[in-house]
Length: 399
Image 1: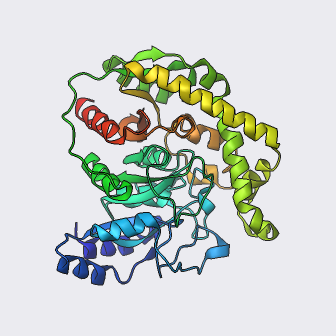
Image 2: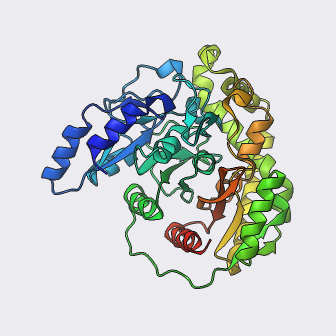
């Protein structure tokens, strides 16, 4: 894909609200990359990741005209490798939402049905890939913000292991769980870009003939049709049932305490202007203030024990399988004004498990419900990101 073609598609598909700021220097940067002997590849970057001189709004009225003075570390790595940023993609304000509807630019629309949400908070990146504006885009994932929109838009969404990518120049949401991730149309693109942003090297492993896969039955959150589609796949893959009693009983609440407490701490310096935030984002930040220090410390201990439990379960497995979302993409008019209501729980479903245990996870477009995509979530072992990508490649070929 050429940089000029990506820019033209972004302009032509502006009604999706996927790419919200175009880089008018992209073609100049592409020619400069060619002179350095690199093949310029267009890429789009989520609007909470700093890009020097290119507007970065965090989806917020507070930053609607903000242009950073430096590139985020991941952006610098992309540029050095010859990837050309064609623009910034829409995000739920401060990445604090699962729908990409609360944004200074308005909702991002799902390219598969423009009356439906793209998911969030990396909804703009997922929509840009699904619409063919770019083959690969960068997002961030704290509580599923790469995997959720990947699921709803029918693309691949990869969240690396905790700590795999540098966070300098990425506006934080919950530092314990924040991770830079990738949305793409192919698994090869995921691997190539992951190696760039994580500074990894190494050749791809050979595809496995037989995968040992598990299903944590006690964690599955899905509506009936999604659950039926999920079990159709896991039955064909001969996945076995596994139990994680501590995680099943206390994991989600511990994740919530840590995520919301840290978000409140991040935003306390802006407390005087919380009235400018979107209502759902403000409510989540204020909710974090209701937790005590003892709640936070206790949640960290649950997280530690959950990670031990997870590693014991994974000793004999390559990956765990779960639905990426409990539902396909809802309609925009069903979500507006209710972004932090029950729909949030359905969209975040089981997306909290991977960040809680520090594991890499990938959403693969392998299910369809009512004509709409729903992702199959594949969770690997912490630190084994390339191995998980190999598992994902095998599943894409097998299902």
